[in-house]
Image 1 (cartoon, rainbow, N blue to C red):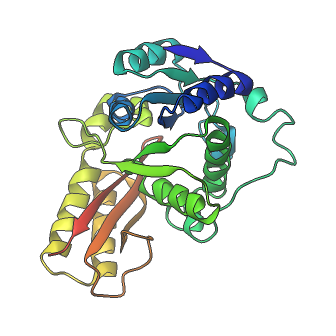
Image 2: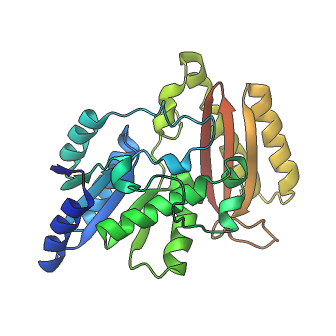
Length: 283
């Protein structure tokens, strides 16, 4: 696997692949890679002739007092994992390379509406930062297909809508969440959890499973179900931001009769913010 740090280098290499008729898959990450990220790479390997990954801790998607400075940077270990998974090329730019004129006065990409609810309401500007950096990366790498984990479900839908609205020629693939054996969704931020918190963290998945089971069994009073799930998480020691039942295709509030829903939660445990979701197909 080759690692490059400049836009000129990666454009040159990918242009040669494309000139030779190669299909290119892309997996953007912020590094500190775990098995969920590596699963994206192995899935990408099945869908293309060449696989590109990126590692860039994007400052634009971190809010005030969030963990940008503390976010783990583990480039050497990440390179080993990516190479073992069959990644062909890693793009690991500096902030100066990505934002050469700095953050002030930067042109942004914004997906209104979908970016302002759920996690967007609790992390103002987060999805604007995500859409901006992903848009830049798509223009730099010019992939045929890009893969994102469904754990960040709202992010996945924001990116799909951005690609559709801006006519970007990139196929977006959502890959099911990879979980620990006890059900906890894999996340780079799980490493922030203390030992006792790690054991308790599985309760967020269990709460969503119980909520999803009630919905599948015909319960329709979603506000009451959401409130009960919030109380359960609070009693378990979490500080929940939200638990919500939404339409899977656009995260709108269900109006009745929907056959595909998603239940989502975000909650803080100690200093760590955890998110998770489950898709529900109603037969």
